[in-house]
Image (tube, rainbow, N blue to C red; front, top):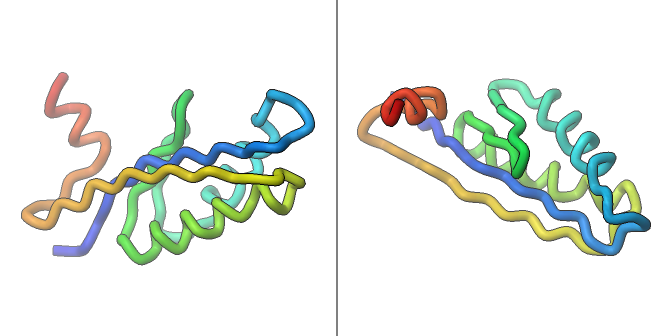
Length: 99
């Protein structure tokens, strides 16, 4: 069985010129879209990413850096990882299980 994780990622740029952070999040999403072997789902409060653990962690590091390149003075990144090893489960499977 392949090592597959589901992670919820929240990137919070601080020290920006305006209260709106959508340009920063859009730039983060561009990086996520380019990642090979990763699936994602943007939500109103964060992004769900799925893939091999090593790739997910590497992607999180890249995404964390994005707001700095756009001028943010501080970035808080929150990540929650669901790493289940007894069977492969996707985010969609988890939703179906409670529907």
